[in-house]
Amino acid sequence: MYLIVSKKILSQDIVEYTIQAPDVAKTAMPGQFIILRIDSDGERVPFTICDFDRTKGTIIILVQTVGATTYKLSQKNAGEYISDFIGPLGNHTDLTMYKKVLLVSGGIGIAVTYPQAKALNSESKQFDIIAGARNKELLIYTKELGLLTNSPYFTTDDGSFGHKGFVTDVVKQLLQSKTYDVVFAVGPLLMMRAVYNVSREFGVDTIISMNSIMLDGTGMCGCCRLTVNGEIKYACVHGPEFNASSIDWNQAINRSKRFKEIEQQHYCRILNND
Image (tube, rainbow, N blue to C red; front, side):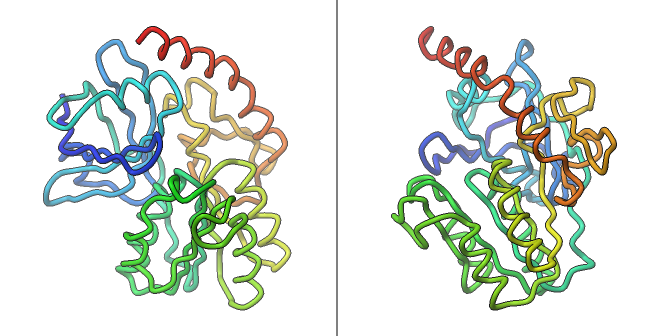
């Protein structure tokens, strides 16, 4: 059993959990993920490691309530326990070959870019970070990012905070005025493809994270299957990060929509039962 050390509501449907998991924290690296089960009858669900403390033996994950399992997890409070918390899994992010990095996140994608920002800051690397959301209430970790860089860039669709518009607007502005070795983008598939389309106009490589399409984390369920450079890959085993130019984007986006309606129906049944 794994103790929920703290629970912090960050915005509508987004919760930060700190979990006591010393074995995971011992070797966790930015870019990796964990698999948890709420109870012995629960499904296996992957979550990105947002932060870790090796001394305290804790792992931080961000959870957005979008389905049955995440809803059940949202009902748990600090002091309670979850059944299983396994990791770290996946390949960690390696940005050591780059000197100037542009980090871009959309929504809950900040769970991936925040640990990257911490790592780059600790290495005194040059980087900028853009974080976007639909509105101010959904924009998270603004203060934390301000401690890592003097000028984080924020965007909201409705203009309630920062730049009014999309992250791609700021990506284009920065690429026009600055030089970067790589763009690292995490968020919805459509957003990541849009960032890639902008950055390739400037001849800059884009690395993206396909963590959002993972399910069982072992490559057995096939949900995170991708075509990468014409070959079948699995985000949880071979990734979760890939060069954006290698992805069959049309296939990935079409596959991501396949079970949306069924997932929403199941989520509604869970809420109605409560």
